[in-house]
Amino acid sequence: MIKLAHSPDADDAYMFYGIASGAVGLPGEFVEFLADIETLNKLALEELLDVTAVSVHAYAHVCGRYYVMRVGASVGEGYGPVVVSRGGELRTVAVPGRYTTAALLLKLAMPWVKTVEIPFDRVMDAVAAGVVDGGVLIHEGQITYGRLRLVKVLDLGEWWRDQTGLPTPLGVNVVRKSLGVGFAVEMQRALRKSIEYADSHREEALRYAQKFSRGLTLEETARFVDMYVNSYTRELGARGVAAVVELLARAGESGVAPGCSPQFVD
Image (tube, one colour):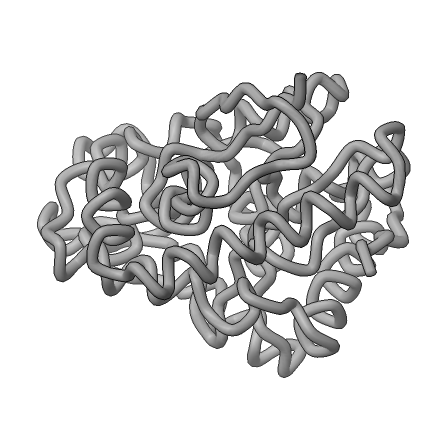
């Protein structure tokens, strides 16, 4: 039984719509497990998942045990997690989990701040209540923070582009190496077909994704999905691969994560 996992977010829901709807089959029976990305990161660290979404940061810690698929990646071209505040000096900043790429980018961009781990869906409230000076927002928080009168301090995707000229690689889908290269290739093919099915049935796929969007309108859901189901999602390509490799290299050089040479599924 394949243990297939992804986050219960609109972009992942859209990507996996073909599989979830039964239109696309997998190379074997599977059970689907949905959890927030930091939970998936921690489960991958224990090698408890066969196929899963993980943060690129987390992949540095499981590099020897998982292949990276060239489809299904969450990559921003000049945008990414957003640091917000109520205004004023940033001393304590909430991050949505130790192993998230948001936490890694913050450490690279603002190494002087003290980070506090808070579940991703509580970060905005923690900032608004003054529990922390600022917070790093992922998922739909990147487009809804104005509702709580929070202001953008820094878009970490913009910062990364200015530093490297590359897109921001946030999340990837990985396959456990012990299952074999052949299985990984079949899984990659299935996920590609799932995304293609969602694209060809866009309205129903977006309505399905909206169920996972935590209060977004259908229009907002489409906007968010289009941010993170983009050309890099459909095929990581040379530029996307270069971005993943560069982020992992900088994470290793900074001491934030172990050194890692990722292995991609062909």
